[in-house]
Image 1 (cartoon, rainbow, N blue to C red):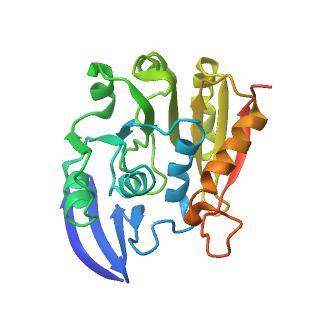
Image 2 (cartoon, rainbow, N blue to C red):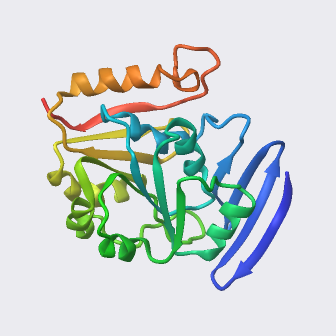
Image 3 (cartoon, one colour):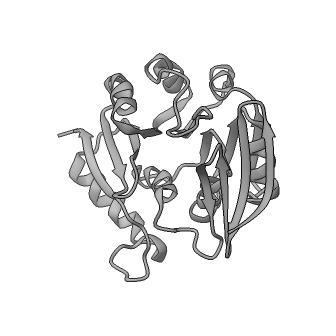
Length: 248
């Protein structure tokens, strides 16, 4: 593994490392982002951040990503939803610099803003089909969330289009418990789990569909892509989907 970029700021040390074709971002020694253009679906947790987009029957067209990191998810969205418009917000200018220079995130239909993600959301008049909350504070060890998800419930809902989708990256039991009050505002809640990570990607949506129809449609949409079709031996996708709040 080769370090191609290193920088220290008050409270954080950044490193960008390469291993073969893989680019990796570390903050205070914690792996935050990884992307390999030859194997965009890698079998890691970053794949699961993409999966909520396949739950609605209509593909998301206007997407808001809160927390850019290295920009792995931007690559995945552009690969599987090339017509989508993506707006990214990150407080950390180092993340933006690294995402652009070293992870080489796409420019087409991608806008990146530096600032507080939740302030951006509160001041936005746009409606988004999919809001992705991947905001974490810099920590040594397990990343921490800086804001209560429940306090943001009205803000999320005000900026979601009709039948819009909200997804959150949460780590550990305590963070999952902290976001449970959000569930009252949505008809269906699912989570995606990777067997090797503590992360849970929690998807919240309002839909008239029953759980069986949601799961059936989700599977069919994944099978439309070779890289996401788990019936193929070449598929690296590794996840389990569970219903948290049922529509049935």
